[in-house]
Amino acid sequence: RSVRVELTVNGQPKQLELDPRVSLLDALREHLHLTGTKKGCDHGQCGACTVLVGGKRLNSCLSLAVMHDGDEVTTIESLGTPDDLHPMQAAFVECDGFQCGYCTPGQIMSALGTLDELERGIPSHVTADLNTVEYSDDEVRERMSGNICRCAAYPNIVRAVRSVHE
Ligand code: FES
Image (tube, rainbow, N blue to C red):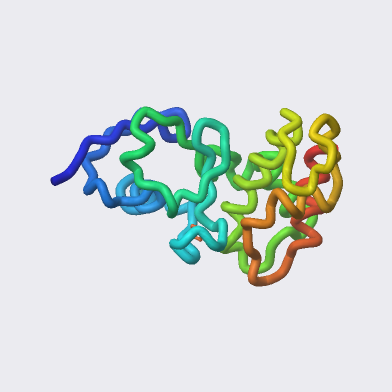
């Protein structure tokens, strides 16, 4: 039996009739045809499916769409266009933060979540002092550690994220 799920996706209200077992990732890709969000492992291991829900990062493969009824979801499609890149997209290009590009939408959404966490002073596992969230390569690496890049573009990804912050 399908259930009704209402989402706001990239600012647009969407109503879906879904099998309750459909993941948020499949709802985005298969039902809303927003294929910028990638499916790598489908098991919470790679981060390719990262989106923002209510401004916070989420592996959309790990969450059922029905759990997000009423939520605001932001995907890579909400960012720039080829002619007018979002600053984070431009930074990835500028810093060569990818090779094959498959992980890049997830990396970029995760990077935006990372910057937001840093701006709001949210501590990570490597933050020793909760009152001084330090902004460093290690901090970015730790916060982005859920996003795997099989081409190992990590140093350039870290550089890209930091270049937007600085
Ligand atoms: Fe969701 Fe890999 S596809 S973490």
